[in-house]
Length: 361
Ligand SMILES: *Cc1c(COP(=O)(O)O)cnc(C)c1O
Image (cartoon, rainbow, N blue to C red; front, side):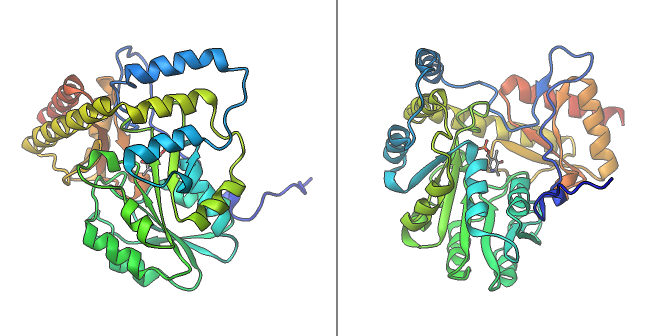
């Protein structure tokens, strides 16, 4: 008997998101460098605030997130009224697609772009349009050429995942100026904190009616497990997003932890400095053994191998050593492996294992 229960169009075209693996059979001391997590863990202040929140678990959380938004606004010199908080920035991406794109509409993502853009587009019944990149860098001209009257959203991450590359202020401005007036440009700033002096696109949001920035507490602040992200947008767009947002989308513990995190400037500065130093060390160590990577602006590097077979063989070897990195063939980068930057010991361990692989080949 054929079922008369059918999902909305587009939903069955969604490929399930593949997360970074977290265990290897037979290994106790697994080093997980596959999900761009901050392995040093959240700050002491965050853990204290989170623990204390246990006493408040009987209460419904704030619906307007006023306290967290005020803290974010203060930290980044933004207007708190134009901030919206979500269950990870993934939820902000979902809200944007749900609110602004539907059947017959197009949503642009780029060749190696983050997979959630396509997933949320399909979930909204809209059509994802993939635009080529140039040598693993977002190509502004190609995006602008792909825009038409059906284009409702354009998503880019800057810095991008999984390439680690970013485009500069002149290209960003050209993109913001060039997208049609009926199109929202979404600048995903999941890794913006790792770039000194970059505002994640906040100033472009301030000066345009159709630019949105998304940010997260999952990467620099080491809070991926709590699911907290936020968006910054023109008032009219925020008003729309708040209508589709569930009233209690963020839990009390998540709200207090995120507020403690954004206020811990010392923790953030140290995490950025550690990442910058360890990333430079690892990129150079791998380059010396014949594994190049593009200059990364994020908390990972995209290691390039001669072929897909070599990348997979190296991944197999790393696994045999209890080290997990990310295969990125699904992002059209079959000859690459994405490696999260851990602490110094983690970087040494992965560099040593890649060296073993290159040596024994
Ligand atoms: C990790 C990541 C996110 C965010 O994730 P959340 O945990 O949902 O905040 C968003 N965009 C990109 C490009 C990412 O790599």
